[in-house]
Amino acid sequence: MRKKIIMFWLVVLIFGLAGCSMQPEEKEPEIVRSESLEFDDDFLHIGLIQTGKESGWRDANSNDYQETFTKERGYDLIYIDGNSSPERQVKAMQDLIRQQVDYIIVQPIVEYGWDEAVEFAQEAGIPVIVADRQIAVDSDKYMAWTGSDFYEEGCKAIQWLEDYLEENDRQDEALNIVLLEGNEGATATTGRTGGLMKRIEKHGNWKIIASACANFTQGEAQTVMEQILNEVDPDQIDVVIAENDNMMFGAMKAMERKNVSFGPEGDIITISFDALREAFEKMVDGKLHASIECNPHLAASVEKIIKKLERGEKLKKKCYYIEEKVYDFKNASQYIKDRNY
Ligand code: AHR
Image (cartoon, rainbow, N blue to C red; front, side, top):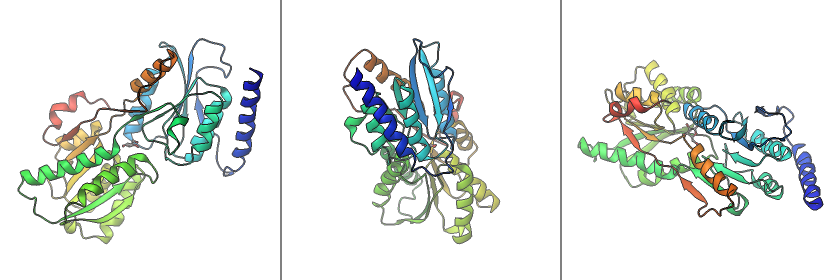
């Protein structure tokens, strides 16, 4: 026991020193929790390190955690907003270790930079569960990961495009593609881009004529798309692929401002990811061709993992993939009523 306490304070001390290398302007992470910091209660204390508020998907994902890990269900959820800063996220893990929570759920902004923090959590005896994107850390250092198969999502997008072109007898046409990517270092970006490129490369007559990073946000995508439209003749663009719906909404604003016609009722083929309610509305309105679902409901899968660990069971798998579908302008009106995010 004494050894455990010494080890814990050693971890805290090392973390304190590691924290000195942080940028001076870094503010403390915003911690929203309902209880005092002393855990003299019967709740299971779960620290959730979220990426930020970059997209509609993210809001739905945060709500899902908040609706699942409630007091009524025996949990005290400590929600930490990473505010789109990887450094803040690592610092948040340090704070949660200090608080000696029972579990840490991390939804990383980027894959890198986690080795030390995850190792400290392991040494402090706090199980880490990774969700949504992944971390580039030895998998024996954390309990499990749950989330989307982002690479497969990228492949599905191109499968949809191939089917659509074939249905319209356009499979032999040369295609110029504009690609808007998410933030660098995120599994959602590398996976989707990887799947897209693997399938695009198979078409000798397809070309990416412009690609840019817009960090999964609507505002940045609008700016980036405006720049692209200043440099590329819109008549040369056949397809716009955005790695999430919000970036597509931003790109649409930019195209509208330049009177560029897009969507099933226009010229440019538009494909994005997430399948938000607003994307369904755009598909029904003839503005968006397809949205490849990214399921934000990860809390149930995380809870299952926690319950197994609480029962002392060994996890049979390291990776738990979530189910996802493909929606397009042809089937959107059938499913829109079920979409509440
Ligand atoms: O990691 C999931 C991705 O991150 C979603 O596609 C995107 O909308 C979010 O910001």
